[in-house]
Length: 67
Image (tube, rainbow, N blue to C red; front, side, top):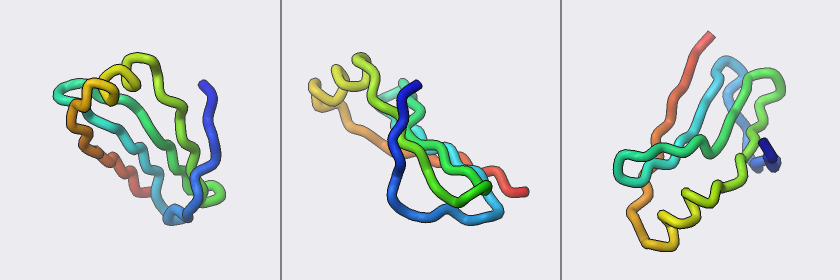
């Protein structure tokens, strides 16, 4: 998968996955790791772009895993 750096800084003790939810469909959006505290943004799929185009409400779901 293609990714791009995300500005910001993650906690050194946690790993975080960020998902975008459109109704009952989830897309992995960002991955944050404790190794260097930075994140990576995944590029949107055509399916996600289509849901955005249709103006389906987007919600953010965050999954954190502590050491």
